[in-house]
Amino acid sequence: MSLNIAFRYWHTLRHLKPVQFYGRLWFRFYRPQPDLRPAPPLREPGAGWQLPACREPSLRGPELFVFLGEEGCLADVGWSGDARSKLWRYNQHYFDDLNAEGAGDRSEWHQALLARWVAENPTGQGDGWEPYPSSLRIVNWVKWALAGNQLPAKCVASLAVQARWLARRLEIHLLGNHLFANAKALVFAGCFFQGVEAERWLRTGFRILAREVPEQILADGGHFERSTMYHALALEDMLDLLNLLRCLDQASSSASPLENRALHSQLGDFLQAWPALIQKMVSWLQAMCHPDGEIAFFNDAAFAIAPPTSSLLAYVDRLGLGATSASPDGLGAPPAWLAESGYIRLCNASAVLLFDTAPVGPDYLPGHGHADTLSVELSLFGQRVLVNSGTSEYGLGPERLRQRGTAAHNTVVVNGEDSSEVWSGFRVARRARVTAIEAQLQGPVQMASASHDGYTCLPNRVVVGRAIRLKVEALLIDDEPLPASAKGGCVNAAAHFHLHPAVVASQPGADGLELRLPNGERVRMQFDGAASVSIDESTWHPRFGVAEPNRRISVALASARLQTRISWSPQ
Image (cartoon, rainbow, N blue to C red):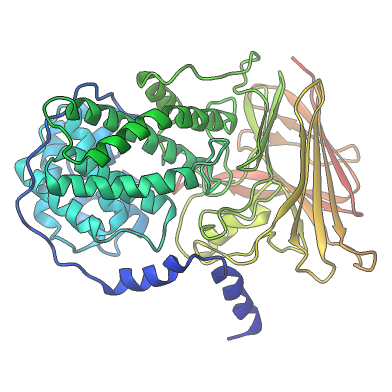
């Protein structure tokens, strides 16, 4: 093993929790025996189940799936195997379509597919029995039943077997959103059934949630993995759980009481604490959306994995959790400094800018992190202008690495290196640390600034600083990649700006370049301190399986300071 590889492993592994080491060994070698006993009796459902958030349909025919932009007919691809990617297979076993838009029109397809899944997926075998797809499937089957559909008897029996299997296959080695999904599924199974066994599932799920919710949901409402997409998924989880526990509270007060008093007490604690927490999560989501109403792309993020923001906000309203906030100019949420998660929103009547001063992720769980430190996204006049490149795939290929790399984001690249050492599919070795974060959100000029040390590993030990000023008619971005000492030598640095595919850029001239927005507005970009400016072909990835051609403006620095001025005529 080379010294560089040894250091990479050291910087990756030294942050992990002990459970992530011994948990991996346990998960790999322990294989429980399927428990095929009859299912516990069903709990009498409490009143008040509200329609959950809806995704786009993924079932286009009785056997025709569309996941991640790729079709597959069950007769051709089956339930497992190399004919489709691992992530595609996971989606196939989620059964999200049961609760998608217009699901009632596909109920006959659903009934047949449910029966077929039970018949063709032997207990404990294949992709569908892995803990994460098992967790999402359990939740979707129960949500479908709570919506008034009749779950076939064989599926009810299978649901109990799945819950027993999951309870012995908790993803304690992965933690994060995977363990949260496991806990959510056990709570749903424990509420769907009743009796001693069901309350044991409920107790396990409650214990995990009592520990994970305070850790995973930060004080500003953001999810601790710092991905806008995974935050939206976490919000959906919390809304589903609150929806379910309100029904359980009604049922336990009447026809199907909880026998365990400690569980009843913990249920009351969750019902009291979670509404305020969810409201913070809603405010965070709104702050991290563009004026088009959808999420910005920081870390692993794409559309159509989580429900649309509008669907989540409608769900919030159905649960009676209060009105959502918006700025009077109609461009979305007001300015915000999300200090605990590390994002800053600047906005005025023309512009919305989102600034990433966040860590790559939790030290022990950076798998969905990108090397995007100090990156920005920008909308003008309600239209996306500067966009990070998004996420179109997981896995171990070079395209996954490229999309996670610094050059795929709107920030400064030094010596062609990544600011954080992303590698493999979900690994990060050395990672950038952000310091000197400041923000001023009041008045006609809003400001934010920060620095990071992601390039101090280079021979000249570069510290990158970025300062942003948002005015009524202009945005100023000052970048300073400076050696840590006077002897550090010259810095080879470039700032990248990725344009939304609908934005057209003119060729750069002596006075900068012009951007033409979809609705006809014209925007100027000028650079003070540039050695050269070029417009390169690139791609934007708004959904998994999608690559849209776009343009990347690359600005090589002539010295240790670059000022980028983006100006427009206020409307």
